[in-house]
Length: 206
Image 1 (cartoon, one colour):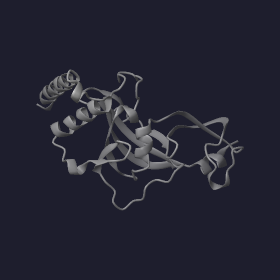
Image 2: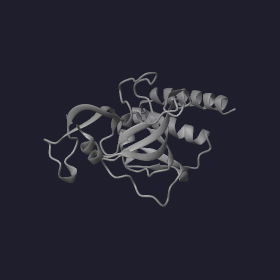
Image 3: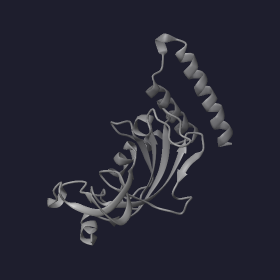
């Protein structure tokens, strides 16, 4: 039922976009188009607008499970989480949960942590007295998108959050897998535990 309704809404939305583009006085920007897509999705899903928080960057999110007693996670800590990423009214493009896996991300930098590899890298920051000459053994294999880095500064442990990202906070004008350029996307993220810290990494270096 939702699938059929979603298709109808998207077709109506596209018709509106085309109509506006043909009328110079109401031409839509890329940001306007993406705003319409996200808003139409929220309306179609019956999500109460009061549940959705919007930040100054354009990130929108709502809590599915909220931990009102916890604290936000400190920068430089490694957070283990699960996620599912979807196109609006479309397919799942990635999911650690479906793979029965977790992702370890450093809060603050957004670097993806892939364990101890025995290769020494320059330090990522200068906290706790470390200098730019400090070395460690952690291997970082990538970095999460901007919308994720902001989300990780908001979430607490044992929360589940759904985020709605304009392309400016996601992959922008480039494509990634099945995600076309200039495409808003959404994620469901679950936070599990703190798995490591830079100090622990330093102490285990050979």
